[in-house]
View 1: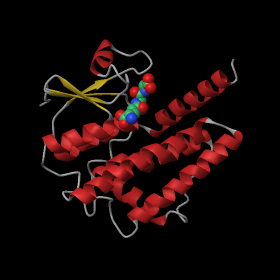
View 2: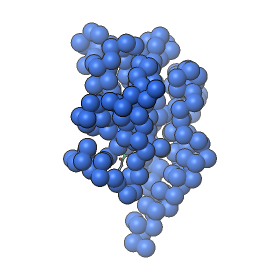
View 3: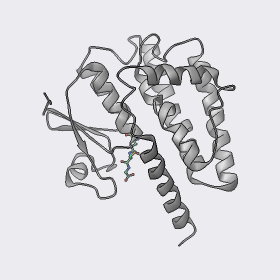
View 4: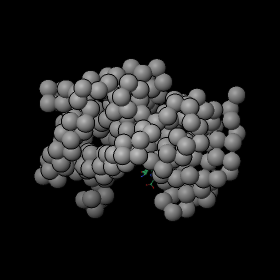
Length: 225
Ligand SMILES: N[C@@H](CCC(=O)N[C@@H](CS)C(=O)NCC(=O)O)C(=O)O
């Protein structure tokens, strides 16, 4: 039965939204999913996230929580089964550090590599690769960033497993060479094989078409057409 006290406002292809869905599913929390059209934002979204006006938003007992990283921490503190964060303060700080690094360095550069062309594409792909080398070091010798189980940082980086390959195809750039990133490549497989994760990514073809249309739109706006 759906839990009407816990709602997730998201957009079908949002990798940030999927983090939140994964966190709830791993913990076995029932929730109501509300699909948002980010190109024609609902009053509910504007009321719940008036600052950024972005998804995901978690609405718990009518109170909104915004920003996927903060939402995942809230979920972890509210439903304590299947802990996502490590318990030890230094490990928790490191998890937050690498989560910001992943969003600020890897995701940002990968999106730019997908959207831009020419030198900007090349330079951003290089930056993403450099950032990914740090992530490769972090996962070496481990099944998941969280150890034996999927944890907070696995969910933050989860998009690399299913979304980055589609971004690479849509934007014609390449970051994850399995020979250069063997540890991330086996982590990707472990992550996508997990029973809670495996059926959750949006359909690949639909995602590819969506990203291709974003790139075309961006290019036509950049050239002033
Ligand atoms: N830092 C935010 C990023 C969320 C985000 O960029 N959401 C996108 C969808 S993937 C969005 O709502 N975009 C609408 C907009 O930018 O107006 C988070 O972690 O939640």
